[in-house]
Amino acid sequence: MRTLLVANRGEIAVRVIRAARDLGIRTVAVHSKADADALHTRLADVAVAIGPSPASKSYLVADAILGAAKETGADAVHPGYGFLSERASFAAAVADAGLTFVGPDAAVIERMGDKVAAREVARAAGMPTVPGTPGGVAGVDEALAAADEVGYPVMLKAAAGGGGRGIRVVRDAGELRAAFGQASAEAEKAFGDGTMYLERFVTRARHVEVQVLGDGTAAEHLDERECSLQRRRQKLVEEAPAPTLAEDTRRGMTEAAVALCREVGYRSAGTVEFLVDDETGEFFFIEMNTRIQVEHPVTELVTGVDLVAAQLRIAAGEPLRAVLPEVPVARGHAVEFRVLAEDPARDFLPSPGNVGRVVLPAGPWVRCDTWLEPDAAVPPFYDSLVAKIVVWGADRDEALRRGRRALAEFSVAGVPTTAGLFGELLDQDWFTAGRFHTGTLERWLAEREESA
Image (cartoon, rainbow, N blue to C red; front, side, top):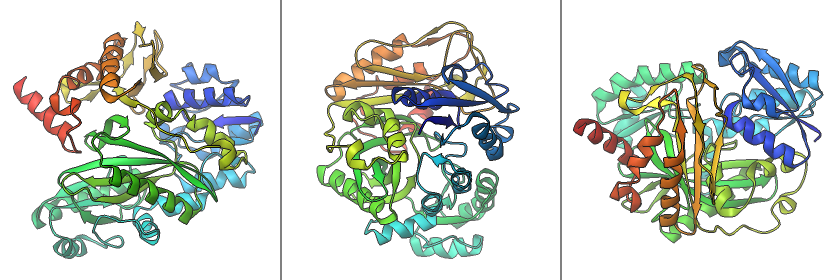
């Protein structure tokens, strides 16, 4: 691997370019019109314009990206996360062009990207799954019959979905009738597939995921992350390890994740996601993300493993045992705060605009993954993530204290962000005690708004 094209933008493009540089790999950035002067374009050895500002006309155009690879002599493509990262057709097109796709094979992406098919694979690997329909449902009448069998409340989910889109929780037949068409239409628009399936809704659920690495034959886990603090099914705070998680639950999840990787011959970095019933301790497979995750830095800080570098080395043909000679032992605790250009005082309204002065946190055991610079612009065309503030401590209490300091140091003039909200979050007893589930943050936000 001599030249790597990074088929993405923002902080993940910056992150991948830096990892490649550390390995002595030449880098190519692609950019839309809006990102012509973005940080990732200036860090790369070469930058190629691939289209107008909207992602649908630039970062989602596979032919434009492959054309840039051919133009610059790239021999590998890293998709980052989002955009084309989990499109089996893109991975196949990269391979067909004679290039190395930094990720699993297209067949594995297709197999694990379909949530219904992935559940069948998980069952074959002996992994518990949330009770629900074995496949997609043909329409609302079939969904109603299935819900009667599964038992309310149920969750409607897009078979081809991710990122919280196409999901609805319904508590009775009337809600299901009202929600089905809307959820299916949302899934069709987002993923080109409106197929829905049902699964039981776990009322007090935690969202815990296991980081994995595989080379197609061998596989290993790098422990788990807690991802339960979500708003509208979008993660806002992640940490490793998961607080208050029973050791037998942790062991069962990590062993199941490795078994799944071996079942599908997984190659690259990936994440196996679970729901944990906070009342019973049961865990259930929900999906596998066949790419690097936004929250990967917390795993890096507790294990000392550069996951992006590991992806690149595995893609270049190195066996897992060369990349990971010893199974890493997690040390300490890490927390990530996703800072968004959104206004919490206005129902998290996205806030694109020109940025003035920028102050990023630093100091011992503080990491800030960002593309932000003074006088940059937050474009209105993409995800609102502007920075990830990640901290490490010898234990969770120390990590949270360090997080408080880092958040206080962070400052961006010109656009509102969610950084201040996290400062408030750190004052909540339920958060500092690690007593929360996937519904806790939204409930706190609603109570906060009512008392304002």
